[in-house]
Length: 428
Image (cartoon, rainbow, N blue to C red; front, side, top):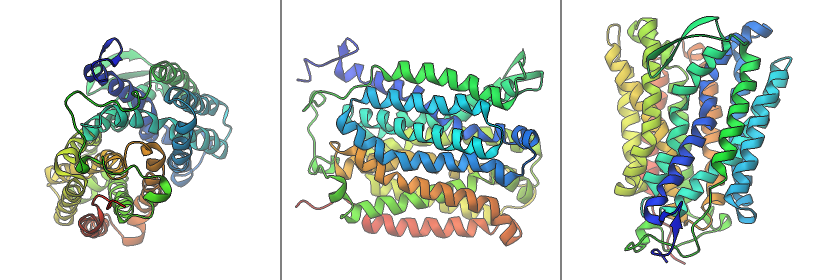
């Protein structure tokens, strides 16, 4: 069957990589949520609200992103990847577009947070499921590249959104390449509409070719092994009864919580603990975003090579070392801060590859979409707690340094859980 199957007119072993490219570009659109900071200040000025209220749409977006994932996984049992992805892309884009009409932060939380966030929850798992089915031999690498677009999205979309919002004359810089252009200065609400229209076109068109391989297809010359997840194809009900599920789920919570807590304070933490100039701190955040993106294919590849258990342990060791570095960081040690936070962002991105790869490896590809919807609830829990923690930690503890005692402790706990529980479920 491997010789007969064609993808985009090419041999399947070559053509299947185009699904990864399609998924990566779709994720560039979905990941624009990470550019929320560009909208915060303009919206605060527009409606006269504080930092907490202006964070609500972002927090609710992440929550509904996680809530709708299990629902989308079940849809893939009844409908094609194309249909589910198109539906999710339309819902997400409509949420962005109608945010133009929001009169206050409460309505924006509904249009952007619930509708757009829910749409992302529906479409997000589809490219992952497609990559998982087409790449049984390279699950981690393919999934990591597919979701890598989500991680680096803000690097591209944040400058575009900032340019649209205004002021009138502004240098548009993408990857630090300045592009002089007169900004339309349309403000934050019209920017929602413009981006939503662009996302509608891109996500719908790129979703149309998405498809699963024929039943029983595998790459020529590749033979599945028990270590690659060939031994089991568990249903969600069977999955949640295994120790491996709780190992992946708890470690995913810890990875997301530690990463998002650190990410939420990246810029002010560097300025407080190392006296980093604001210009350097702002530039460093763009560097961190790159590590968030590349962490996905890197840890996806490592998960293939090292097994999910040891890829997880490696991520927690990096988080622990980064935490120790920030415990001792002092004025003038900007480089130490940059290296540490590159580690935090790398590992957060890494868990968006470790988790889906572990899911497919331990519980099988057949029900991977449904199973990952449940596993992905861990990200929602980590995201909500991490965002709240990063917002209040300084007020509670009087500074940023104590935060890293928490992230370090979480990393140690993660190592213990990974070693104890992250192993393939036993055969019945």
